[in-house]
Image (cartoon, rainbow, N blue to C red; front, side):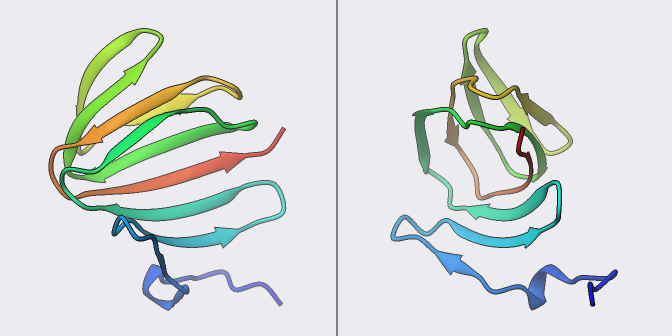
Length: 103
């Protein structure tokens, strides 16, 4: 049976050596990932084989894409089509909600 109401705090958390913490919820056609990123973290240029939306819940930083560098803050949403490269620098502790849509 699938839970209809899920608390992020009830999901298992994995923490990378960099301090980035992730909690995931997998669905049949998409997945959500709650990510807490420490201030000063840099995400090197990379891409994904799937479409992705990323909501900035809190924090701020700089996003780099083929369109250049742009500052971001809470309330922004990133949209990356499959294969689109991106990189980011997180100036403050940042919380993101990632929606991954496999093709």
